[in-house]
Image 1 (tube, rainbow, N blue to C red):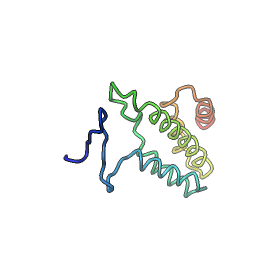
Image 2: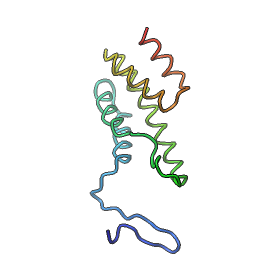
Image 3: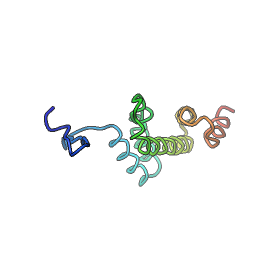
Image 4: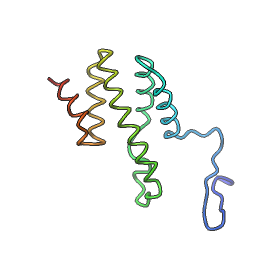
Length: 124
């Protein structure tokens, strides 16, 4: 598309349209919203946000080192969101959702003690 990729000296820049949809931007917006919410509202917003998180940003790009900082940041946000979702789900009585949230967190970070502990507790 003309005008999307622009060259500036020896670098390239993406100039995206204002009405674009980028899942990682929407994910972060929903996470910020959930940060300000509590209870059922936070639970619903976190579920929406975490549906958008599909794994590492540009994870299939073998030359994606340039995105490492953002990739790490988004994964950390997803991990904290999954832990909070699990806690909220437990408090609201949604035990299966809590188990799923903790299990998903452990897929991202297998040695995450809080998720291991909570999941073990829920499985009895």
